[in-house]
Amino acid sequence: MESKEILQQHIAKTASLTEEEFDYFFSHFKALSFKKGQTIISEGDKVDCEYFVISGCLKAFFINDEIKMYILQFAMPTWWTSDYSALYNQTPATINVDCISDVELLCLSNSDREKLCSEFHQIEHFFRWRTNKGYIASQKRLLSFMNNNVKTRYEELLALYPQLYNLVPKHLIAAYLGVSRETLSRLNS
Amino acid sequence: MESKEILQQHIAKTASLTEEEFDYFFSHFKALSFKKGQTIISEGDKVDCEYFVISGCLKAFFINDEIKMYILQFAMPTWWTSDYSALYNQTPATINVDCISDVELLCLSNSDREKLCSEFHQIEHFFRWRTNKGYIASQKRLLSFMNNNVKTRYEELLALYPQLYNLVPKHLIAAYLGVSRETLSRLNS
DNA sequence: TTGGTTACGTGATGTAGATCACATTCTTTT
DNA sequence: AAAAGAATGTGATCTACATCACGTAACCAA
Image (cartoon, rainbow over all chains, first blue to last red; front, side, top):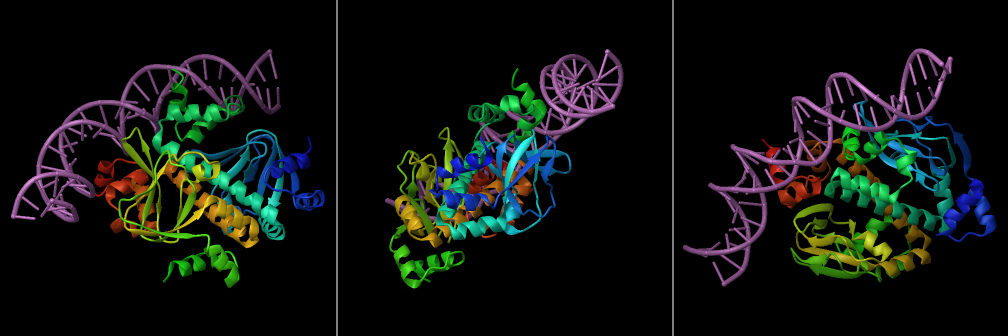
């Protein structure tokens, strides 16, 4: 399936656009390809865009003391990613985004998103719905963080995204769970 | 200042409504008063509304094993609160909301919010903006949770909301930070 | 005024997970 | 195919925070 169709099906779930409206919407996206290991956003960068994942897997992460890495999000096909704080507040990036595998993305600038949202009520509706879903997921993760031990959080994560187990190295899963790779490894025993 | 004005100023920051439009918007809200200690949402409840705080302070929290409490949010004037997961997915509440002090609220039902969002593009715009802010704050808190120790998180919280120090008992602040009240108490020494 | 509940402090001890150190296996590059 | 680097496993030790236990002070309600 083409990127265009993937995006179309994604937004059709919450917004009804005519064919011409969608074409117009789509014309604001730029297709990009990256190789495994390439960086999309680095700490300190000016952030202009958000990214819709067509294929592959990205991570959005924070580096502390230039040593420890914490992963905020694994971004998989049909997910959106960026440094939203930097994007909305027009401040330098505080998180990094890079490619865990080869990826294909569609890129939408902040100003185009705002323009499209104000031009089409349905597009604004879509973005409200999307952010809402993200907010609810984020609250849930926060609660799980406070409430559950590592083992439970690990099981929860694998239940939700079984594909991660094979797709992503264990030390990155540890960085998502907020534990050391050693502790994660010891869960199996 | 009256509730109506407080809400009007709040939404005027992101949405421009005429006087009549705002009156129509406001007519969907119901004013409610509660005493300190009263419960707004209990685990297992059907959740129909979200709440805009006019005065006082609420907590949205989760109880684990009927013992430990984790606070997701302190809701202060001009903040919104509810169990959003339950509200959007029409599932029973998994979190509780109650009153830390006497409070005045404006209550908006889920169906009225959706109706208003579809009737007025500007209202949809406002709710997108609000949720977006919440999402960014939630991500930030998650990051702080993974990255910082209790002392740093406590200082961050007090820097952001100095009024909490006097307004809210320490054991509730501990429940927000995700530590025991004893550990929080020992930070001073 | 009194008795009960809630808030807060602080010592002693327990424990989940971090950190350090090193070995092994798997993957990528040349 | 060889070499180098990344990913993973596992023991030993350390530490931040939890838990338990107890005491004191503040705040209500009868």
